[in-house]
Length: 128
Image (cartoon, rainbow, N blue to C red; front, side, top):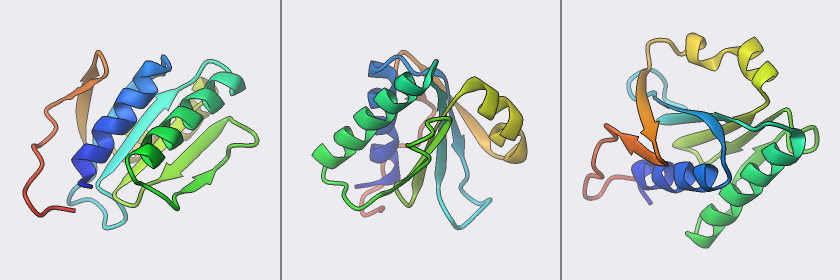
């Protein structure tokens, strides 16, 4: 599965559970650890877990297994590592404090409208 396909599934899953303030950072050329950071907010720990659970289930259904999930118990900042895409579901306070978007200010920000990413590169044949 390409990184763009993963991004689309993650964004759609988060959007279907009413994630707020969704942002996608394109990290190509900035780091070797991943291609994209998806960042969104939940309104409560229950909402954060609901978003996380749906992303994990959606990705499992698509064949993605063995991912790393961190922060689920406290549900203030949950990280899901899909290798070339890392998803962050955060409480607004944690997002403001850690300010990932400023830390990765050189990254290209892609707009998410109605659960779809605008400007996401088309999948290239043979890309991983």
